[in-house]
Image (cartoon, rainbow, N blue to C red; front, side, top):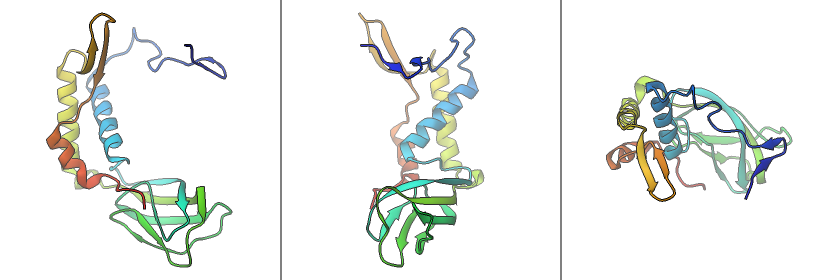
Length: 175
């Protein structure tokens, strides 16, 4: 089976493997991506985020971040300002005038969220340990291997104690 994009073949993730270097920076970025995937958001630094969220039309929505330091804009899809109260720690927002509009991508947001790097040394510790562990293996941590098909998959794997440290930073279930 061949997969093709509208412009032809899908480009390789690594454009030129002959010049690719899996150095320390690569493994730090790979570990950072694993942490952010695990937690469901970027965690640090505090930055401006904007986008849209889905709503079931109830009283509560979840922004795609925790440690929300400001909600700069919250509108419906037509640009009408919504009335709300929010919990900075969890990213939950409650509609204070009726209910949120229902539908896919019906609420637009612009927020500032994330911890300052010095507020999350535990996350930085997980990042450094995972990156060191992955880089110390010849080509990373082997996640799966197949002998006859000569297939190997490498991954930055987070250990159980590291996952436990990240629990407090994970996005919760959608309301």
